[in-house]
Image (cartoon, rainbow over all chains, first blue to last red; front, top):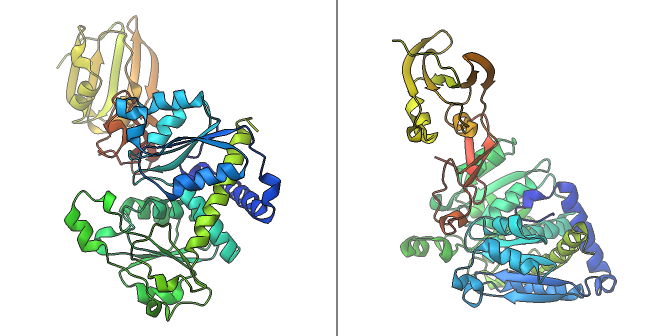
Amino acid sequence: MRHLINILDFSPEELQELIDTANDIIADPAKYSQICRGKKLATLFFEPSTRTRLSFEAAMYELGGNVIGFSEANSSSAAKGESVADTAKTISCYADIIAMRHPKEGAPLVASQNATVPVINAGDGGHNHPTQTLADLLTIYREKGRFDHLTVGLCGDLKFGRTVHSLINALSRYEGLKFVLISPEELKLPSYVKKEVLRAQGIPYVQTTDLEGAMPDLDILYMTRVQRERFFNEEDYLRLKDSYILTPDKLQNARQDLSILHPLPRVNEISVAIDSDPRACYFKQVLNGKYMRMALILKLLKEAGTL
Amino acid sequence: MNIDAIQNGIVIDHITAGRGMKLYELLGLEKLDCSVAIIKNVHSVKLGKKDIIKIDADIPVNLDVIGYVDPGVSVNIIRGGQLVEKRRIDMPELLTNVIFCKNPRCITSVEQEIRHVFKLTDRKNKVYRCLYCETKAN
């Protein structure tokens, strides 16, 4: 049974297959509008989420399927003390595929070990969020037409930012990449990511606190939010939350073909004045996320023999 | 120092000097009724000094524990006073319920029945990471 728990579960060829399917869906949505008729997606969200849950639900509806599930742990059997393993076994009896978000790291992996249907990790705490990476990848591909030979700036919370770690993992498999890591000292990319991913694969990177200084080199600027929920200490959050705010004047030295991405939701790290700039791609990214989730649901259901 | 040869049992040899007690504890050898000898700082041509554990019973031992604590150790199986099998123990790819994840954000911190599994992610530097949250083992 195939699942998507970590973005590295899929090879670059499989990711390209998803991108090709997503592009085909974009070109001809009618062709896919009834393909999952009679199939059910269970969205098991043990942690609040708006865009990811609705994106999964919209994806399944646009494939002609149905959705069951819950959107907070209090309305699930977890509130009665049921284990993730038992929940996964039970929901496998009701649904053809599961999308799970859970505050504890590794919970979707536990679910995948116990479910009899495909499980998609829709975010496990600060750990992985592979379908956000799918949205990021489709956006980069549609904007740049390639994944190789790009200079990618990652800005903001690079320590707790799960989307950043997943994106680095995914892109590290392509040639000619260079990363510019822009963050305050306290939120630098963890050393194990630098050592075990970047240095291990000989991928060049620079670390800086200077966003404007790094700007002229970038093909991609991936902004992130400093997430309150990842801090044990409120004081640290308040001190670091406004470290980087992207405003039009900071883009003065940026390339005309720069692509600005953000996993959203944003708080104030990208000024709304940037939204009308043609280089802003973050709302396209949201849409791309839905198309990639459609492609993912199709792939996993096909591999499970359900479609 | 003389330790009797064993008739049926296990000799864990070529243990890095000083790691014998740790292996003794992690293998749970204190629970055995049979004779168990830990010999420390034995002269070794190959290692200079080494520890040896002799277990006077043919019991199953967790080779993963041995490979994790001290890769390169030899496990000799003795039957009828003869050496019948000699194995060099390397680092295992997976470790189950040998070490435990201390990350409070990990699912294993709240669901007690989940086995604590660690995966070898960097053989050269002997790095194990939790299968669930990828936290590095200390």
